[in-house]
Picture 1 (cartoon, rainbow, N blue to C red):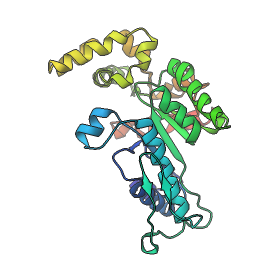
Picture 2 (cartoon, one colour):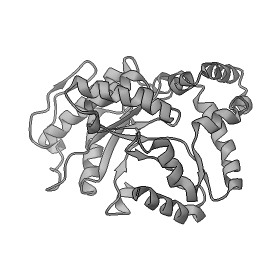
Picture 3 (cartoon, one colour):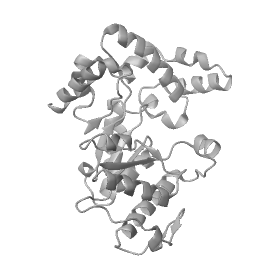
Picture 4 (cartoon, rainbow, N blue to C red):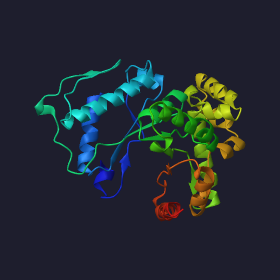
Length: 298
């Protein structure tokens, strides 16, 4: 909300909110309000997370997560149609039933000219990617699975399969790369950030759901090693498993001066957009701003 209030031009997207721990009606209300207050500059991004976090951290159900997410999105859209007065709320699916919406709890219509939020998805594996091809306006890749090989060999083909199943074009689904970056003003900055990314990759790749890119490069055993270390509570040893070769292969790195060149080299023919986090040091904000301007001019 703060980002939407701070500008009249910025589009804001949740990237991504956990759908399975939230009520579809609560999500529909929140997204509706954000769309109204921003004159339509809000996009709703939803994903599943993984079983241990959904069940053990949030205490929610995870069985059949892809269908749950599909049903959740269908329920949110049914709420929006009811808010618009297009139909009575009467949504029934395997995982959600919503059939009560009284006038007192129906929000005001969106302002004239403001459309309902578009729905985006995030994820990694085949079924979730194909679902995005069927029903989403866009898809955001996970930081562990954003390499050009993943995009070209798994992600884009999956989006195309899903799109064709419902008579859409894959061009109807925007693809945004949620890659990690190693960025800095100088080479010394990059060297320092490498260790941060090494630790983060080691933690993330211990998760079985994120192994697709490791499989592509023949590094599947890496995930097994990482999980073994975690079982032994050897958290400080995780980053030792990520070699320089792996880090250089999986994570793009550049000074801000060369960010646009590296982004185009890695993703220019494969994606509609990329995610770049704000610099940890605000002294580099102007450098990132210039890099983004350069990217937009390509």
